[in-house]
Image (cartoon, rainbow, N blue to C red):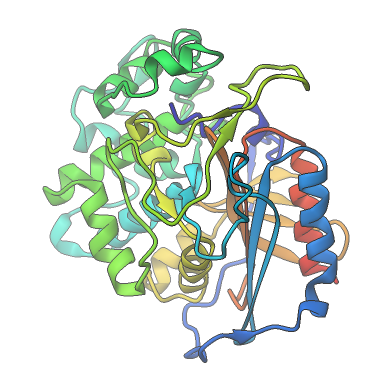
Length: 391
């Protein structure tokens, strides 16, 4: 199962209870020239940071940087522990919670199109009547904006003990091809009391984005996957990006995905977990992509190419998480302590894969880093970001 919001992910997000306006990305961007290779020496500190990740035990890591019409690829370690094949710039990988900016973008596009009659101020109950009920949960009090910003208070279904028991440790191999419907995932979350009243706190919850995907389907009559493809993947030419649904495989080329199955032991055995049914992540984290495609998407999003100005401002108005961090609608920001540069993007964890995409507010300097293992110190990824943006 895709566990794209296990505790490691939350280490990077400090909780806070106030809302603060964050920097808003420009509403338009100038045409960009075709990328040309960037001198390797310009990214030597970033390469050193990638090597530190593999020295710490990750099988392999790759990175792509796009800046000022130039691109750079960096790799360290291997894509396949059996064959020793190195990681390739074009490798595809599971992107986990980096699915969320795609889903938030589609929902905000729908809010800008009058024919759908959708607003982020709408309640969940307007679109999914009667679904969010029980144990103190009430969809009549939760707005679509609160779903996208993780201020709904809904319990994260991935934290459910019963679900975790099925997909951690060796139980993973029994259940790796099990599937789940969005309704089933929502029911798991709703079996728990809310963490706080809607709008009165912040807590990362994948349940929010399962519901957001259901709203997209209700508003359009199409699957959220087809809307992502029609509205984002095809227009931006993201040839390495897919919404796999229940397909267990990763299209080639790709490295293997490795996991210790969340066993808390540095000496735990490493397993190949490349194939599994990602429907347990659904709209919260099922997508597959490449570093090139993620950079192109985030650049287009920050550059104002995907949303009208009103929705652009809404997406990038962040809930203050403290420590120079905020969370907008499906996207977050942080101020790098080493140099004070603010970057926007998202991090992700899914079984066998860790990814981080970050960009300056104008979208003109962007990096994606992917590990083909789901364990390790997140500070190493942070060090790679600071090496790139603060050099």
